[in-house]
Length: 99
Picture 1: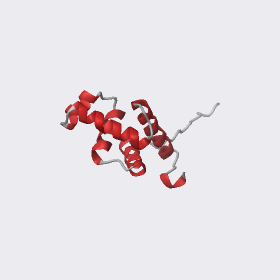
Picture 2 (picture 1 turned 45 degrees about the horizontal axis):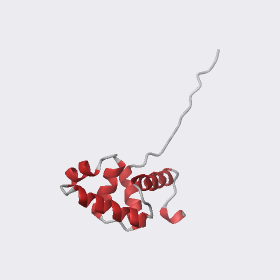
Picture 3 (picture 1 turned 90 degrees about the horizontal axis):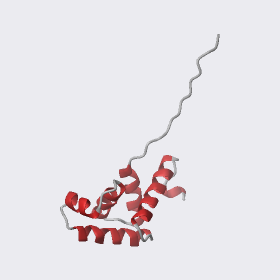
Picture 4 (picture 1 turned 60 degrees about the horizontal axis):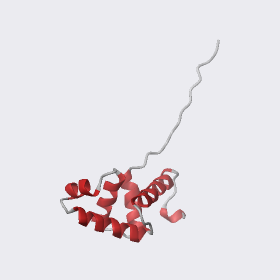
């Protein structure tokens, strides 16, 4: 008679908000820039994000430019890449201090 085989896979889930918070500390992002970063991570367009934040799409674009400047990226994809990298580091148990 064979015994049942069980496998257990544990993974620490990190919220986007936690990753955004860590990035905001590292890159000195304002509250509105953090809010913009969360919207970008959700895949929102500038127009959609503007409606949620109750500001104009041009203001969203200005926040995005500031975020990109602070993070040293030139595209939305670069910003999301930094966010994903931060999320991976947090999930692996790393922190800002461990770099």
